[in-house]
Length: 530
Image 1 (cartoon, rainbow, N blue to C red):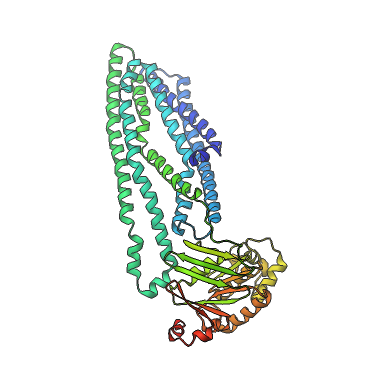
Image 2 (cartoon, helix red, strand yellow):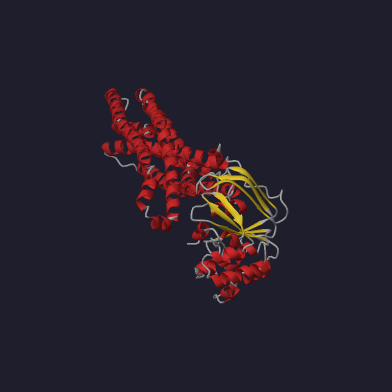
């Protein structure tokens, strides 16, 4: 159904088919024209019309092929763009993280969309090949019906080869596409954690984990190429045998006076054209890859939206988690964050701090449990992705807020003075904006503040600031968003000390929730801050 939509939404495939039909017609007439030229030469005469007809047909075929290349590229590009937009829209609607890992989603967005986007071109190519075969049979019948009969005896075997190729490649192609996505997911995950991997000394183990799917990928790839090679050598045997049979039949025709020498050459040409579909092993494989890619894209488009938590159901500004679990991150977490509280989230690396922040902020849907929020959420990250054309666009990204609100948010997080010193101030292109880690974090924080959220979640969003600047920014944010709930993931004892309460996570569970002062008496809590 998806591939059908790709084909029908861009009617230019009709132009491609029409152009290919003209070029194919010229190609079918070419052997007959060549036969006439050969007979003319053997007869020792010169017929200008015959020569011009031959040259004209060759020119039409060459020109048609050139136009076809341009049309095919344009159709494939538009089909790919359509699929990529559909996948992007769906992934954005599903939220983060969805069922599809980042690398796998990138694989479906880039590779699978590109392959499936050219399905219309593949269909036209196969259709023209089939038309050429039918035209070749008709041409043989016009030369001598006996030639057509001899050729048709090979058709069942040719169709059997095509059917066998499609059947044998289907599973290998699907596996190849699936494992490619899995490998991309693992690789992207590893690249994102390079510093952690290097620091923990687990480079070799991580390389083994990333490359673990390679044997399956290699097996699928080898299976595809073996099937294609089998198709090619079988076609390589079938074509000469058919040509030999046609040549023998044509020889009898010459002896009987039914055919000329030039028509024998034409018959050989038509035999080759008639079996062209058998030589389309790469196109048939591409067709199977397009079908497998479309199935992977359809998995994304058919994925139902996941409820990451109830936006209402809690008092304004408050957040409540009941029995929340996230695989490999959180286990049966119960938490109540009253409206207006400044809550610090602390714990050793891997304790689930970022996962808890993502659940509170609605970026992660819990596998079990319920989340209730009272109002909108603003989110700032340790490494913000500053999207947008200019600095102002980046701060207001996803909103329709104007320059005044943007500047107010930047003043609140102490980054306005940095922006106004840029060559074009707030209109400076982001690509030309040199920012330190702390400045980038403050722009990311301004992007959260400008939304005037009921709950502000900061996932290590001030980690690159020194303690004095961090304290200043915290006071400015509290002043800009008075009475708002703040949930801050931090590794700093000073930040935890300024919070109203601290959630201490350990192995994905809440070990304690109390004030920093009371928790500080526990040596294990103090060890969290190193």
